[in-house]
Image (cartoon, rainbow, N blue to C red; front, side, top):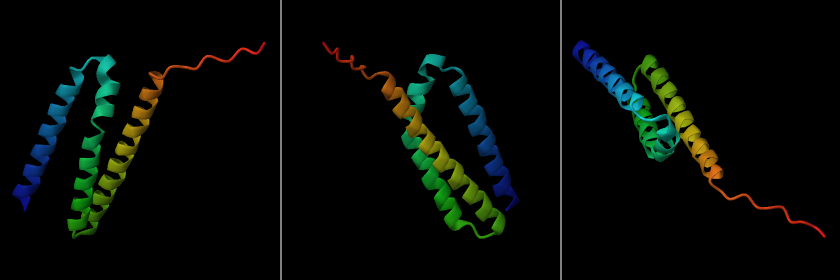
Length: 100
C-alpha cells in the first residue's frame, strides 16, 4: 500500500513538472486557442475522476473523488465558456442600418 502511495505521488509530481514546463514555453498569444482546443482533455479528466470516485472505498477517497469530479466539471465548463468568448471575437459585427 505504501509503495502505491509513493508511486502515485511520484507520478503526480512528474506530471505537474512536465505540465509546467510545457505550458511555460507556449507564447501568450496561443494560450486561449490551446485551452479551447484541449477541452476534450478536460472531459477525459472528468471521466477519470468519476471512475476514481466510483472505486473509492473510504470516506477520504470519496471526498477526494468528489472534489476531483467537481473541479473537473468546472474546468470543462470553463473551457467551453472561454471557447465561446474567443469565437465571438472573430465574428463580423453587423453595421447598423441607417434610416433616411
